[in-house]
Image: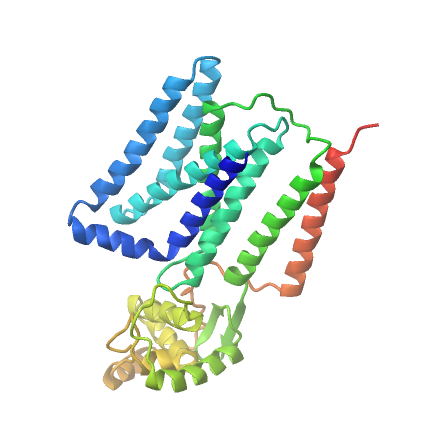
Length: 364
C-alpha cells in the first residue's frame, strides 16, 4: 500500500503545485510551436485515452461484458463532461479535456491504494481523497493572480474522479465488495469524511460567502468585503499604489482580492451600455477609486473615463432612479451568516460521522 500511496500523493502534489503555472506552460507551448498548441495537447489527451483503453483490452480476460460496460460508462461520462464544459473557445476547451484526464488518473492512483478493502470504503476513500486534492487545487487557483477557483470547478473535478473511478473498477475490479462498512475500521473512514467536508466547507466560505453592498445612488452589488472594508481598502491602496502601482502580474504571489473585484466591475462597465455602464462606473468611483486612479496589470492605461465621456453618460443616464443590481461577480457570492453557516456545517459533519460509526458497529 505504501508505494501506491506515495505515488498517489506525489501526483496530487504535482497537480496542486502546477496550478499557478498553467497559464505560463500554455504560453510557452504556444510560443515554441505556434499554431500547434491544440494539436499537441489534444494529441496527448487522445494518446492517454488510447493507451488506457488498449491496456484495458489486453488485461481484461474474465467477466468481460460487465467490465467493458463499466469502462464504456466511464468513457460516456467523459463525453458528457466534454459537452457540458465546452465554451466554444478551443484553447480553453482542450485544457478542460486535459483536466478531466488528469483527475481520472488521480482516481486510478488513489483507487489502487484502497482496492484491497472489501467494503464500500474501497470506493469512498479514493473519491474523497480526489475531492480533497481538487479543493486544494481550486483553492490555490483562487489564491493566485490570473486564475479562478470556485465550487463549480470542484464539482467538475468530482465528475472526472467518478469517471476515473469507474474506469479503474472495470480495469481492476475489487476482489470482493460489500455495501457494509468494515466493522473494525469505521472510525478511519469517519475521520476522513470529516476532514474532506471541513476542507470543502472552508473553501466555500472563503470563496463564496460575502456581503451585499447597497449604495443609494450606485445600486447594489455582491462582494466578499463589507462596504466599510471596501472603503478602507480604497484608502490603503491609494497610499500604497502611489509608489507601487500593481502594473506587473506576479503569478506566484497572493492575489489582491480588492483589485480582483475592481477588475470585475471595470469589465462589466466596459461591456455594458446605458444605465448598466453608468451605475458600474459609480460603483467604481465610490468603492474602487484607486482602480481608476492608478494603472494595473490589466488596465495599463488606467480605467478612468475622460471628463467628456463621463459627462455625456451622466447626462444620458444619470437621472434614472432605477435600482441597479450589479452582476459583475463572475461566480456566486452568498450573503449568509458565517455563524449560521459554520453551525450548519458542524452539525452536518457530526451527523455524517455518527452515521458512519453506527454503520460500522456490530449488529445485535
